[in-house]
Length: 335
Ligand code: UT7
Image (cartoon, rainbow, N blue to C red; front, side, top):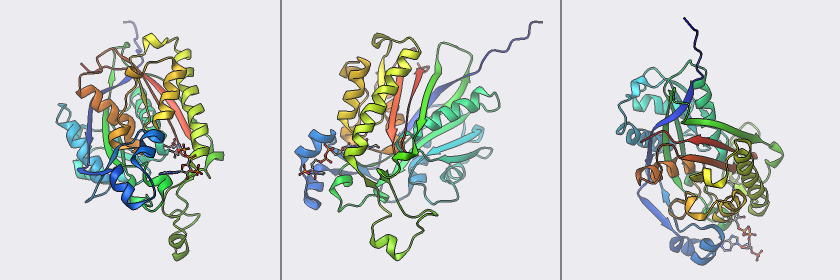
């Protein structure tokens, strides 16, 4: 008998999301900081964001998973691994993944949190895919959940207009269909960017103290201009490179699925790839920058709207704090 060692490929077999009810629109922000709807729309493309009023990141993640489980025959107790991509864990420890595991009843799963800011969903998706490709695990939940409102200073107009709360999840399973699934990734970190986008306190460097609170170090700090410059180049270059490396032309790509930080960064990435606006997934106008939840929520919404079909090539791309950035090339496998 011939020994067959077919490479296992990971593919997304279910999606889900949770959208908090409360809407924070630009008009409201005009009433609390010196800004305008016009400035926010033209500089970022954001019209409104969602706020999670009662509950934490794990609660949003659980609701996203419940939404996902409604669409698949897979049961929570069959899940092998849970990866929660987040910068707003419920606590520093235990991991939010443990809290989600318990709340959804994933009785045989282990899991962990993955901290890579706005690139975290990509890093988590590649990690989950690798666990499946290893042959050891068959059902991996990859969740992007961030309650950004818990670390936003609503007196700082530089940041409070940008972020929102959202959660979304995907289920990864192995497939022997070599035409679909996660095909390539290019992921990067560069810690020299740490000062441009960070939350200074609450970790071992600057544990919580009266001083850290007085200095507002438990909130997001961002040098927007500095991040903008590297984000435009980083996200556009990596998206172009992953296409080139896989011999894809713009005609071969059904959608760019970009991290939703700023419409201008997204437009620049699409332009570098030679991709028209209709082939770019966008939800920044309704949710703002939701960090780890931007990419899976785009996938969920576009899939549910019937806009992605089996066999579509997608390029997922992100840039965020760290710096971290990267792109993933996958072929959609859901009917
Ligand atoms: O997701 C993780 C990675 N993060 C990013 O990718 C974000 C990257 N950065 C950005 O998206 C943009 O830099 C921002 C949207 C944050 C800011 O846009 P910008 O075009 O870079 O504005 P700026 O910071 O250069 O500020 C331009 C002007 C300044 O006034 P002066 O100095 O020209 O008089 C700001 O004080 O706009 C002013 N400004 C505002 N005005 C009204 C800054 N924030 C606001 C505001 N409303 N909210």
